[in-house]
Length: 612
Image (tube, rainbow, N blue to C red):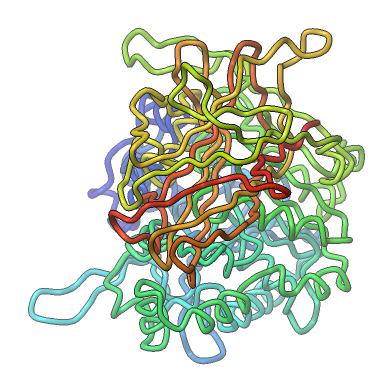
């Protein structure tokens, strides 16, 4: 990434580039940002700072930066932490004698540090906020120099990455102190996406002087330990993506202790230490502090989140007693809001506009409709309407997906139903799903192989496409039954008053009796919605690892799948698939071993579906 103080290295931004980012999203892979998004951020900074000697922006963005320059003073300070580490920062200070609130924005986990969301800072300034954005310690682009040594970008902070640990909490308090000295703000809010959202929550819970008045946490986490390791299964792909997206080599970005912890995680060693490390960095570990401080907290997450799975965020939200709001969206990590934080849209970007409205209510003092919001809003998969773009062959959303509003998470689920796993019907190679318990059957599969049944094709980008109207389609006839156990229900009749055949709302739960020819195995459960043409979309999934098994002996297990808000259409079927490997996760499967799922008397295997 170039230095925005040198506009000769920055290409001009075009309307076509902006439209493409708005339509597709900012990620081109799990570990790369669209270069056009980075160039836009650089061009905004260069124009705002007055160093651009030519026009780099479209007319509307040029006007936006001019309005901010007329209303505010712009700065690019370095803020020194208590231990001497220097944090790269950016300030927009409104020219006014009237006390105004400040929004502090810790950057997300990208090589670009604070610069990526420059468009957001300009929007906040025009809404009446001072802005202080900073790059958390260790984050940002760092390049090796031939012959030895490293060079950092202007947006890279010093030190090593603490992954939302105590050093990041202390840095947040230092940044607050800087804001108080330079802005004399009326109130202080934190807004963050992804890594910045977790830091925002943790600073609010730990600032010794209790100075944080509101938090917006977009694509956030609730329990970092669960993000890393749940049901004895390590979330390898997510951690690998994060480690590869810091902007520099591991030995430069992490201290020796964190490098050792990451090595242990990858190898499955000392997992108690890994969990303790994650719990220390979990906002859910400090709910009592947040509640005691009364910090209004706005949280968003996605149903198919691959970095910070949704259940942990729901559990955090449910325990909060402060003014709070939870948005749950279609897609994966950062998909709903990242483009809206980066580029202008032709219309409102609802995920971002609602985040701003939360700040307006709780720190700006605006008279808006936030007090009338229901605390929980769920966007329902996949109720949007689309058309096919003839040039790209991709779907374009023409009508947004339905959103449902509830007074609490507990009100999302109004009833449950059990679907019992049954033996294969006479003409079917799959087991069935029925309303009556059936025992005495068993189904076997060979463990140890990846199959076409998978949670996603790639971290982040599969869900980004889903958010933009293109959910992954599965050909169920390609699910290799040698390596999978499959149960399929009958076509569903029309729901009451023409509603969806099944309105899945909440956290499904699966109970199975399992045995293996090995002493350990991993089960990955997937729930699919199958259309009449036998293509499917995924509803939810979750892995579970079993160790200490005795060959040939049954073990009955129950585990929760990830929460879902999903409408199953009339004549569609539910399909439950259980395999032994998924590219997202570690496994304890012995290749070539046999896994048997059965349904003994008194312990009928079943899927519990939440409805609402």
